[in-house]
Image (cartoon, rainbow, N blue to C red; front, side, top):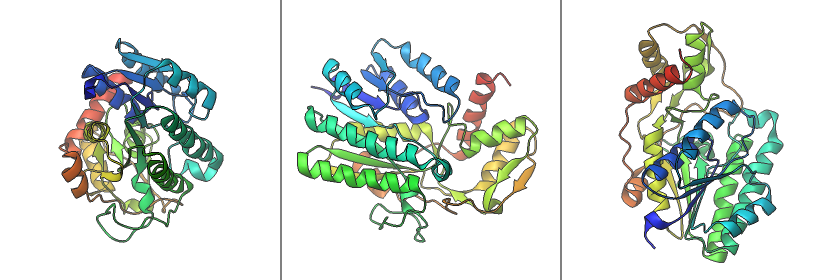
Length: 322
C-alpha cells in the first residue's frame, strides 16, 4: 500500500490545524475520515465553515461525534478501513484550563485513551498526535529541546499534553504501535482560532477596542505559520517510527510587541494597548530547537511573521467582510 492509499483519520477535523491538515491531504488526492464534536469553546460557525470546504471533496467523510464516545469510535473503525490516526482533537487553551479543568480530563485524557485503544485493536500503521510547547513549562533553557526534562508543567492543559506523550509511549511499548508526538509552537494563520492572540488583536483593532497585552508586553513566542505546521505533520504521518516526539516551531523567537507592530502596519491603524500582568499558567518565552525535526522529518519552516500576518489579515477581511 502506498502512502497515498492510506486512509487517514483526523480527529478535530473542524478545528484550526485539523481542518488545514485535512484540506492539504485531500488536495493531494488522499482519503480522510474526519471526526469533530463541534463544541462551543469558540464560534461554531467558524468550525462549520471550515467543514463545508472539506465536504466539497469526495474523498472526505465526516462524523459528528466526540472522541470520549468509545462506542461511536468503534462503529467508525468497523465501517472505515483506517490506516493512520492523527489525533488533533483536544480541549485547547491554557487559560481555559483554569476555569473548566474537567473538559481537559474528558477530551485530552479519556478521549486520547479511547483512540489508543482503537489503534491497539485495529491494524494501524501510524498514530500521530498533537502535543504542545506548553509541556516545557517555565523551562529556563533556550531553545527548548525534546531532550529537556518536561516534568514541571504550570497548567493543567500542559499536564494533559505531557500525559499524552507518556500514554503513547506505554502503548507503543506494549502493543508495538508506531507513535509520534508533535509539540506545536504557537500556530497562527488563516482560519485560526479566535482565542489566539493574533485573532483577538485583529478583531479588537478593527473594532476600535483596546487589546490586552500580558506581562506588559514582555513576552516572546516562536510563532509558527499553519502551512509549515501542516507540512511537518504530514511528514510525521508518512514516516512511522516506533516512538518519537518532535518540536514543530519556526525556530525564530519574536517579541509580542513585534507581532503587534507588524499587525498595526498591515491593518493601517494603531492598537490601544491595555498592559496587564502575566496570566497564571502562561510562560514568558517559547523557543523551539527543531534540529531533530529537520533531520528526521525534513521539517523546514519557511514563512516569516510578516508574510504570515499578511495572509491572516487577508483571510480575516474576506471571511468577516471587513
